[in-house]
Image (cartoon, rainbow, N blue to C red):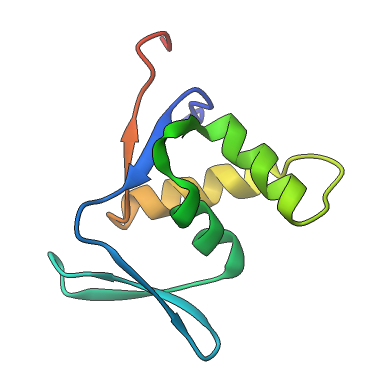
Length: 97
């Protein structure tokens, strides 16, 4: 499956994000599941507001972590996982085919 870099994503309704001693956790009350997140997943989850395209998220991470190139593979894998776990909702761009 090819990742759609034009898609916009937003946090699923009801997902609670909390800082804990060694990072962050996201709680999904619909599934009664707790997810432990690394710094990349946390930043992506917090940044997904339904307005930024996935490609913009990759650039945002590159800037935040001082990377020369956007970490496209890592961001695609992380976003795919967050969507699969029900933490993010993906909205495919109407221009994407």
